[in-house]
Amino acid sequence: MRVRTILTLSTGAAAGAGAMYLLDPEHGAERRRQARRGAVRQARTRAVGLARDSRRHAVELAGAAVAGYRQARDEAGEG
Image (cartoon, rainbow, N blue to C red; front, top):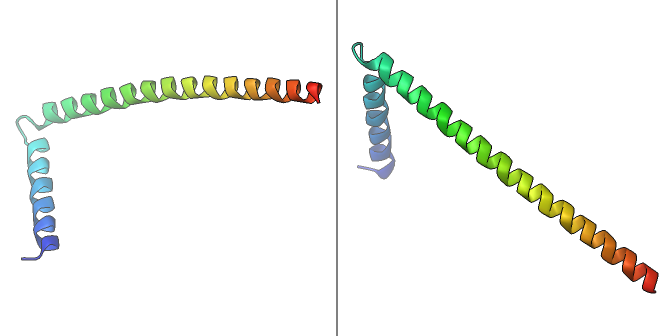
């Protein structure tokens, strides 16, 4: 069997099992609700982390820009 065929079969089996798990008539609604809550929680956590990292990076860039400006001004004044 070719590797692509095995990979395709495995992917299809996993997708089918996931669909059966989430679409189960007895427990599917609760499982979907839990999956949705987990996805939202993870997205929120990652968004907060990304915002925190972006803010830190912006502060570093602004500090570097100010330092570069001061250095250029000092060098121009000395020359």
